[in-house]
Image: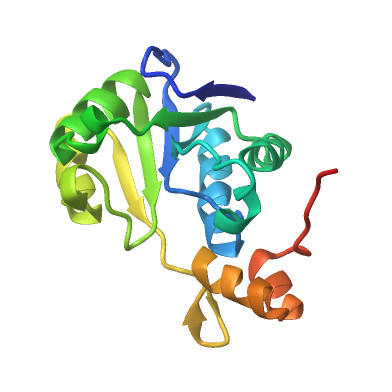
Length: 188
């Protein structure tokens, strides 16, 4: 897997299938998106997970993230993903209009042929971009777009926040069920 981290200077020339998000924990909902990428990979597309690079806060790495960046990278590589892009979250990027994000990053830099997202995915300046905009721009930019429903556990959507709460409260069986694997920590 090729990792493109904290730089805007890259260009993927192969046609790609992309999913976007934080992917903290890489829970069963995230895995639904990753499986969609792997299905498209069978058609000859390269798989891309796009997330923003958020540097860890020394001494607080595990308090803020279920899965530290290095563990997330290892998991995605083992899953069969071709590219992990951890794009820098600068002031300029934060103020990028959603349409410019789609045209300049998704289409030009990543060469997206297929984009997969969850129903509540938002992006761009003031989070004004959403799945409706991604669907609207699909024809103009030449990609296929698909929204994937959230995965539920005990009749509520799985989320990283919900899993963090379970871990914090010691409800490890629930966390394991939502992650699709046991929660783990590594370190010295």
